[in-house]
Length: 162
Image (tube, rainbow, N blue to C red; front, side, top):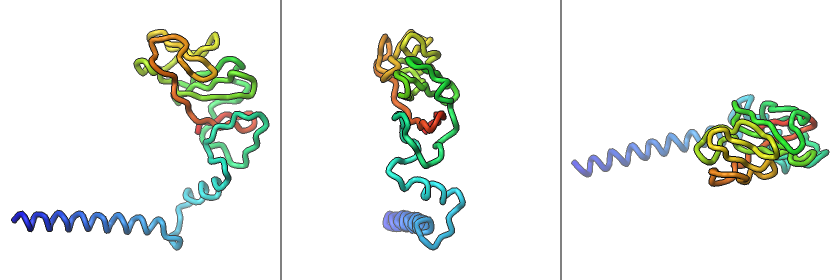
């Protein structure tokens, strides 16, 4: 009975592996018909800069469309300050003119969402943690670490997530 049980398990595993391989070759087959959404990324991303890369260099031109929905216009982000986007859980800052950066809006202390950018810091309302707008490093505790960076794309006067 134990040998039959092993054979049965092997058969099940082999059948599952075969189904997985069949699914992989179906989508990897050049003769397969791609879905309409499958064609856009492959034609839009052969350039050296993948969609969603951070673009903080003034005057940088991108030929690919924005990676995600527009968060803000560049004019919405004050120099030396920033803006919190609560729904997206991201904060965008502009430490110096034309240098846009994005960080998670989730405080590293206990997971509250930061509420404002004022006085050169990103501020959490729960326990008073403060992060510097330039690099999201901790300016005042109890936060144990900086806010993690997020990817944004700056194209013209538009800032998009991703």
